[in-house]
Length: 221
Figure 1: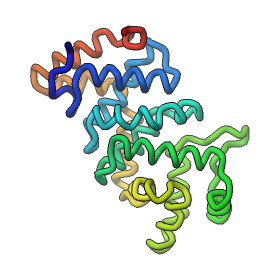
Figure 2: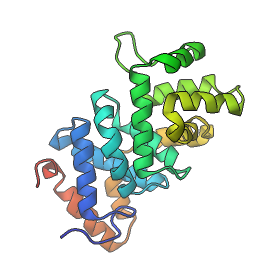
Figure 3: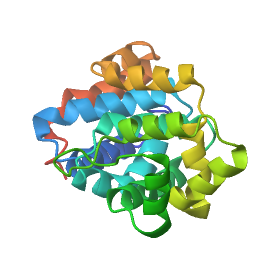
């Protein structure tokens, strides 16, 4: 039934397919683009403390709004990876990112005030939301010289009490960790094949099942 344990860093073949379908649908990827969603999913599992199951549990919460805002799936992978490395995973990571994106897409009240005070632009000249990584780079720069209490205050404004730890995990990540995760996701293409090659035979077989029929994932029952 495809539900044997151990696939892709802690998920089953079935859950991997479901995660891939959710991500592909949310981000508007066509069937022939689904392999890239799998690559990002693999890269998150391979380069952070998150598993594919964590990715799947997160993407069902953040995927719809991220897709609607035309956010790059790579950027969501960066945020998930950095949060996972601070033990913020799954549904918690997903709801945190959903809150962050929602508040940054249509800033109002104290969020709008904070962005203005910091000089952070969340939209481009055409009024479209900037990529999440670009926005978080601005936060990292603007908050680099402020106190921990001030950072916490901004984090609570942007991500809420429940999500501020996830926001701070991204903002406070060491430059090498942040840039390394960005580079990792920018080079995610082919990660699924590499991930399978580096694993044991059973693991490789399961990933072969997933990726061998990648173009049918979106239409399979």
